Image 1 (cartoon, one colour):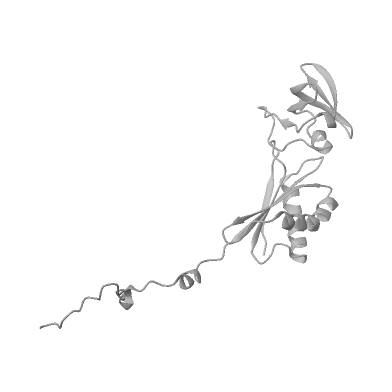
Image 2 (image 1 turned 135 degrees about the vertical axis):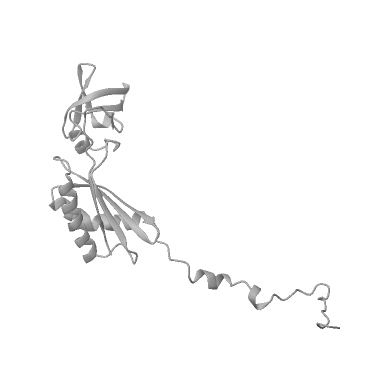
Length: 202
């Protein structure tokens, strides 16, 4: 017969695909998949804090938080710092360079390249420590006080033991143990204080 005779496969016999139809194995396809960076664990963030805390303290600032997250094939290291005088853009850029040098000397970021982001706290940062309240003097805050419930007042003064609030014209003193986490209320006319600087690490 012209063209030759085609034989159908026997029942139950799998049909062999042509070479051009064979699918690559999972191992073959995964070899070309870019390696993704993993986010940071609490242990990793703690080691980073141990490395950068002395540098931040030497600059007259406080370390507020350290967060590591994945950003594709890189990691993003977010460091939040603060001080009594605030954090200017120049301050953020200067401390960013110093932190980069410290992280290079003690590589705790692993094998992945990373981006370092240094910023000051935003107005949404909860007021939990005496220094937070001290730096909020003059700001309107919302807080829950023991035996008083939710109150709104302006911070008049704050020291190591407690805070004085102007609540509807009444000056009221609260110990920190009687206060929950305070929240700064956004007011028109008050400038935003959050600044930041970023830089690439290795």
